[in-house]
Figure 1 (cartoon, rainbow, N blue to C red):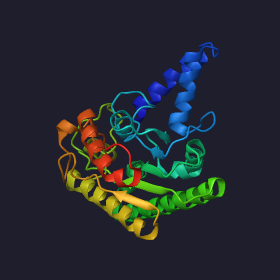
Figure 2 (cartoon, rainbow, N blue to C red):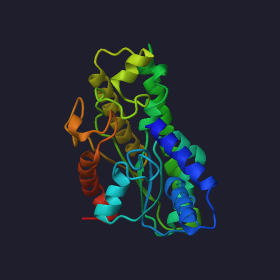
Figure 3 (cartoon, rainbow, N blue to C red):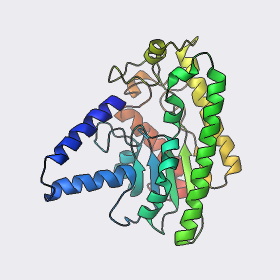
Length: 283
């Protein structure tokens, strides 16, 4: 989906450059885009719940190409998020850019919970590095994910308490559901998680479904392990919502790693139930 997002972003940029910035609709669009994707807002937009996420929460810069988890929770479960959601976002980028601080600034003193949808892009990036060295590369990436996630939580809570006082934030992270590597990509050159990508770069695995589902299970297990070290982190399991191991059902998927509208409806229903005890919103 990176090419599709890039094309859309270029179009938006050209449009904004050639328009009169005094016109409110353009200014409103630009302001909303920055606030939604990067939590760069004009002051606080108080909210009890924050969100920081990747394409499972915002596939295409807020454009309703697919109703991902964020719009599903906002439109169907009455969530009002302060957040930074942008397709392609990695956990590494979130920590490097300090997005946890920006989301806390945006949400204000009443923010109690932040929902996280991160880690998948950290695993999927530069798949050619896995060639001939799958176990070692995965172990290194998981170690980096663990270090970054703990840093996000620790620094985020320290910042929240220092600025607003009160208890630390509860950080809720969901694991992903199983990919379907046999799906065709929506854009031919954007085939992350697809068997076609494995074949194209020479990543030879005995069975693509077994490889991706095993990796997905290992990632979910990693999140469980981190909760044992970080009491502010809560893990919720979304596996088996879209059909189960080794690959989610094709009729519920948009491409290899993203659900379609129906699939995200099922995922949002399950997620809303699982996080309700911590957010007290939506049910």
